[in-house]
Length: 385
Length: 218
Image (cartoon, rainbow over all chains, first blue to last red; front, side):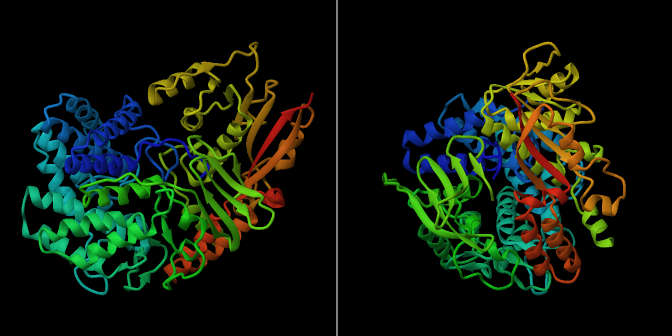
């Protein structure tokens, strides 16, 4: 939270796809206008290399983020697809930007013949990152007419080979980037499911649908009324904290899509919709989760939210937005208001405030600020976290 | 000692760049974020990126690009690399030109570069009085006091913060102790450590990376 400036990362996947969904269901031009603004943000962030400026939030401001740039490509290509359908020639501009990234970076630097690496210097092939690429490549294939079978088959194999076929995490897809801990993480299983479903719709092979079915079964065990558990350890025990809230949008999307193929349940879909809508703050943001104070613990955290819980973050809220947009056919303007709430940070109580102008964290009694970020600025004015 | 070595081996390295010049490592990326935050607070118009490392300069340029600063770099090789790689225009600093409003020194002061009368400086330096010299005796030559002493004649230190303080090392060492025994404990302890990666208290004296800001004495 030191760098608060713009990043062309996976938030644009949810933002662009959400606007596209809203336009498709409402035909209201304002959603197309907003999509164009977002797409132009991304285009202005594209470098000569084809990568996007500051796309990597794990490594800090840096280009070449994964799966962030693939997510950006998905957003651009969904918009390009819509524009082409409505006969607007601007589709080519967004298509070309995604194509440049796919050909120069994703295939040019990350493809290793067996799948897509995490980074040019990091050979690990992460299933959910390959899943995002599957979605981007299929969208690209349809618009370009270029056959992406070679890459798609291998990317599918990366996901399916990481899936546990039996045991206490049967169906769970292991995040290979978690090293010896071999975590099966809910939100990343959800993203893997969406990649598999996109691949299945292109090439309906039983093994792909079996993989989806297994992973949806794994996800079912993580869904609660307050959010989705983070995942499970190799022995099947719960990673109960944090329970993801905004990021559960990806679970919602996966579960809803899976229903088309009789995988999963309507009850889980409704629970996830309720999780997101119930948690929404008066500012319109959705908290990131609950339980960051007990990160990694088996036992559900039940106390006051921590700062990281309550803080709404663009790169998680976009998942909620994208998923909820799939269920929306009518939008009414709502009122937004400020948030003021007690929370914890390093075991001490503070006041969290969000207004249209800023986000801050101050001491309870003397109101001393330990964090203040004025919205639209690139750094906090106070950082004493 | 073995535990501390284990801690070292787990630090991500990023692209294959010599260790202290690797701006993508966990060690350095938080440092660069902190440096950039301090630049922001000063509200300069012109900022000197005082490093002869291309990758360091690029990493700082990435963080400062979003502000409308005029960025000055040390040589044309860095200027070219930043423009070609990031599309960011910078100017090459000339020794007889007006000083920038602020200068950022990512591990380059005092051994490689010096302030040139910039009104404000933000410095990241290594400190020999830290866990690092316990593991690799002698690897860090200067203590933070040595570095500070090279400054005080022209500048007044206005703030000091640090990374990898004894507090962080304590929690991280505990995390490494249990890493192979219990993943849940490991992630909990790792989180407690990472919450303390930046330290604003008096333990800067024994922290591995110290970040201080200075203002020119009038």
